[in-house]
Amino acid sequence: MADILLQVENLDAAYGAVQVVWGVSLRVEQGKVVSLIGPNGAGKTTTLKVLAGLLPAKNGRICFRGQDVTNEASHKRVERKLSLIPEERQLWPRMTVEENLVMGAYPARLRPKARENLDRIYEMFPRLKERRGQAAGTLSGGEQQMCAIGRGLMADPMLLLLDEPSLGLAPMLVEEVFQYVRRIAAQGVTILLAGQNANYALQVSDYCYVMETGRIALEGPSAELVTNDHVRCAYLGATS
Ligand SMILES: Nc1ncnc2c1ncn2[C@@H]1O[C@H](COP(=O)(O)OP(=O)(O)OP(=O)(O)O)[C@@H](O)[C@H]1O
Ligand SMILES: [Mg+2]
Image (cartoon, rainbow, N blue to C red; front, top):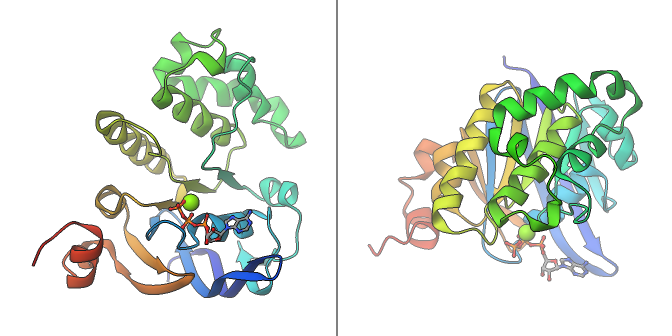
């Protein structure tokens, strides 16, 4: 059986008294790309935040590499090689591209490897290397997303939680971002990708969970979900 990197059981999450994630169970096998799709407000970002430790779980259990991390602080999870690249990117706009990237290598164990990781990221994203001295705030939208992904990779994750990587990007750049996702996966990083762009998410992922109003409505191998009537009508724009 393949190694299960992440196993989530019956996860509930709430903002104050308002519960928005209900009984979410999912698993991510090592080496796979798994997607979490669903409409605005379905609870995708909330789920990823709980997985990363930025929001507490109300109920349920999160196991990463066989350890229960449900109540562990976010930085501890990063140490365990579980990293989130948030929807809002959160770059430091006045710092250079390279300074932003280096900030990603904050777990102490990574500092000696920072240079090596930086070279690897520049190899993967040559445009970041070209622009390494430029203030991150002056990058184009696509370059900023690239920089945020690069910074996440500086923490040398085994599992990358990638929230809405194509947010606000022109169609051509969306295509490009999904090519990076493939490139990162090819380097052996396991990916859990949340997004509204079902078309790309299904193309790039091996397995997919469909989230609707806080619950997993449907799941299956991406190649099978592409032919599912509900997915085709609700997410892929099919008319019949
Ligand atoms: N900080 C917050 N405080 C209160 N409610 C919130 C907060 N963040 C999100 N919510 C609510 O939780 C629900 C789920 O939001 P979430 O951001 O997880 O959805 P999403 O699936 O990521 O949507 P999108 O595709 O628009 O990014 C929504 O109803 C939203 O209004
Ligand atoms: Mg979201």
